[in-house]
Length: 81
Length: 357
Image 1: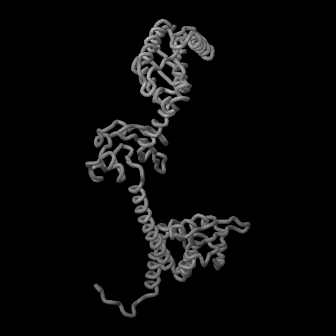
Image 2: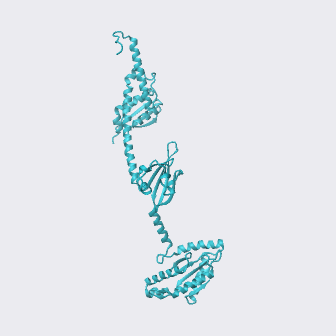
Image 3: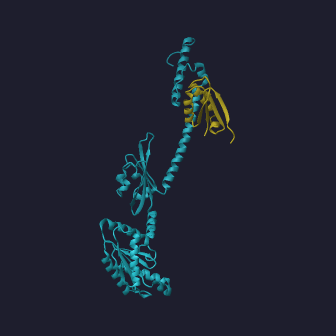
């Protein structure tokens, strides 16, 4: 299988729930492609709360989320099964 | 409209108020949806009104809910398939399964459980009822005790031997939720074990006990004799001139003589006496609680029975007898050495006789 396309979403400075809304907006646009494993969404944030809210919300939608701690904040990778 | 529209009288303040009310309404609805999504409400300082409209949160959340529902639908579909799959395995499974609640009410049972334990009932008559009430057939099914993680037991029902494995299922709070009883029919296995056990302890030719079986009985009787100071004697008998029978008449005739001798001796001794083939044409007899004199009389009786019996294809046959009384705390090797010596003397002294060690 080909490497999935990555969509970078830099929301540094934004706080939840805006972070969540911005992530959901992107996810709504690319839902099918993410679900099929063709696209991954990488969210870069420095909002602590997003680390809980984003994986929780996308989990309910059937996606996987993987959080990595970075120096500048967090990297949340959203992908399909 | 209850009131006339006040044309041209729309004040700037009115518009602002309407706008503020609309924004407030949108924010309240967005908050409600966000709460459902599992996050915090929107605060005006995080998102100003203009950005709020531009961002279209209701549109975003609506789209997301659509995906949540699609995911839920897919999950339900997979769950239904999985449930059907489990049911199929459950019913096609080679063991009976009964699932009971923590109050010991039957929650489910598979096809084999019905067939084995409730042949006259259907599932609907069983489910929801106390296990204790529906099966009076055997106590083992009535396990009301919680079995811990896993408990294995065996029981016999309707001529079948069953192994029961009871496992407890715990809920997310680690409380006992239900107990799964799994029953396997191990009848064939048990029968095979019995056959193997019989084969291991029986002499194939004569059908009487073999040397191994005699040895283990004798060991037990020796410790009993030691403990209770009981008399214990063993007779060893040996067919006279058996080699000639084999050499002149053939091994088949020789075997027939051994079988006939075993049958003859079995008819003379008591039920509780242990009679075994020691090997070749040698046999041993152990008669619990009989002393040397009692054994000597038994040996004499056997000697005369053999002597007066007509063996098919051979005619007259005799046996020599050696016997010894067990000395307390004697080693089995020493005991047998003395029995052997007595038998040797019987042979030396002309055969067809009884010698006491």
